[in-house]
Image (cartoon, rainbow, N blue to C red; front, side, top):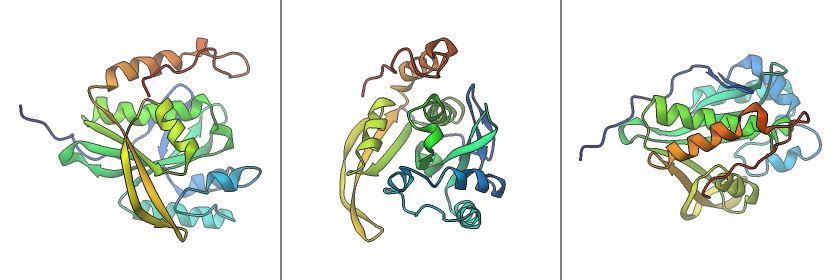
Length: 217
């Protein structure tokens, strides 16, 4: 059986959802992202990222410039109810020839924490990769000590694949990297469950879910 490559790398396009809109990351998003990068609990959110939290809008703008100069493709996650960027994420390890791609560089600010914004931001990436670009493999990786990230991967339906020991040195510490993935054969049932969970009727007036996302994790 001949296996086909993906149609290409993701372009700088807008991915529009019901609650979130993913826009190519630009300097105009820096002030909003800086506003989401300080306050209670934020240092822990940056604990496992390769970079530190920005200490000014100018530092956030510098990050945008560096991110867009890299081989990764970053997007801002915009809360459609406010029009403000509340997080960012990126396409990484982009291999159209192998139809394999990763979601990484994730910083979902406090507004996104455990919300439908985060779930829809992940869903929009996965749907674009599988349904529109023809990828076969969608990856998630994190520091093995990052328990919240591993729990998020399981909640979203990623399957644990194994551990790369002493894979990186990050902020002066050794990182063992946990690998997770969703395959094209697993996506149709996951897509249906994401679509069900994201329906407006699944949320109360306070925005809290009425039913949990039911995936095989």
